[in-house]
Image 1 (cartoon, rainbow, N blue to C red):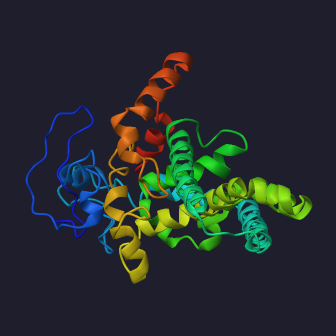
Image 2: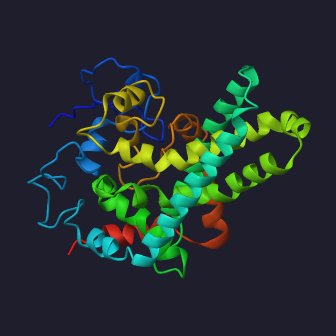
Length: 312
């Protein structure tokens, strides 16, 4: 089987080059950053998201139960934990976030002066959102358990489901996809609205670039899971989204496939993915995991593995 979105040659995490040679289309997204997983790794240790009919496993794999996909028992159990209360929380957060976002945008409009600092604020906002997406993603993937009070079913559950049924996100509507990310931005957006509504004109002008940075960061954070959803959508995406992915302005599909190679220990940033390669080369997540494991004795991704093994 060949992937319609092939990955360029790469090296494994330990630095040993073990890539086979393949013919690749030369695109901006496939050559900008060399990934850390081979095409063979992806084929053998992740779900075939580009196959709309199967999305489970090769016929010759050992065992009859699916390793991934909507028929996986663990994925079904996790999906059933999505509650009406959680749905209500997501709906409220989406409405509140959109209201604050529009209000802040309208209040900011008269202060906008196109200049280099505004561009710098936008770039800094993107990079901050990308790093925050990676940190939250890493923490939720790696630590904790679904049976923890409050955060387990409400926050960690979607991360566990997503690893064993990656395309489940493509079946979620706008509310379920984006509710939690919108919730994160509400305190910051509320402060921005308060500043714009109560500060005098001189004070707003003095702090406008900082306000712009935080506002744009909130926009990118709020959009992160929608961008993430697009990275799992192999059919029917608008042409402009595919273009943004190919130019690596947002998270490309082939780039994010690297994270979904079991055991899901790398490439956590999912807004643009720009920081994945440098953080991997710095062994950033690996070092953090070693420190936490040494201090607490907790094994990284133990709960994630437990759910992955619930095949029947």
